[in-house]
Amino acid sequence: MPTFAATATHDPAVTGLFVVALIVVTFGYAVACWLWPFTACRRCHGTGKRRALFGGPAFGLCRRCDGTGRRLRPGRRVINYLRTTRGRDTNR
Image (cartoon, rainbow, N blue to C red; front, side):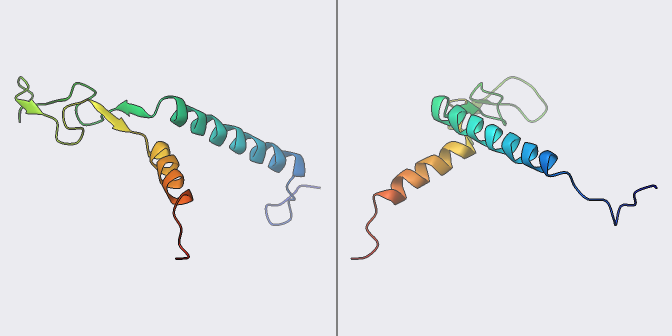
């Protein structure tokens, strides 16, 4: 008998495998954010220089990364936020 989409049941093993894979990927990203907190700036591609209007030679520092060529990863921003909120006393 063919199974229809409305009556098909999901295998719990597939759902469990998906959850485990999601946990592993999230943990791996958290470790990468801890070890390598910076990534190359997407605007200047890590050079720290701003390009001319029509792709000519660089003539200034990149505004997004302040000329460093590196940006803080979004996951590292979350880690830094959690570290600062842990030490705060909200019941004064």
